[in-house]
Length: 137
Image 1 (spheres, one colour):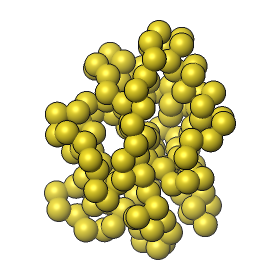
Image 2: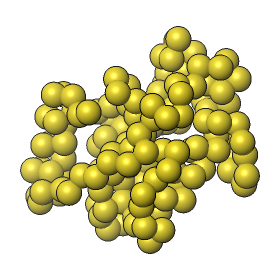
Image 3: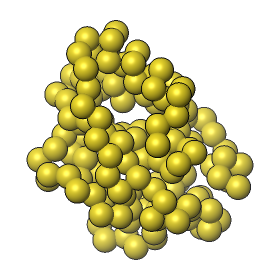
């Protein structure tokens, strides 16, 4: 489910930053149906909250986020904000977390990730000053 404000932000991204239309795709965090070579920008979210914006090898990055949110670390390194959320038992049910993403080149990834972080202010991104416990309680 993409909210109206998100549609507005996605439109700005496509029109002014990328100057092309983006093929947004959706998958789940728990079982991402993404090719292992897919590189791009992704948004980890629930129905009502953007939790994290990232870039890179999407399948690999989502695997790390799933490990941090479930506390089942199999190689992923726990970061401060993910740790706070997990330890406070405020992680939304993993089955309610999904991902919106699109493929793009390295230059586009950097520009788009920064723009989306600035617009959405996702509480789990280190670039965003937020109180994770307040955001998720």
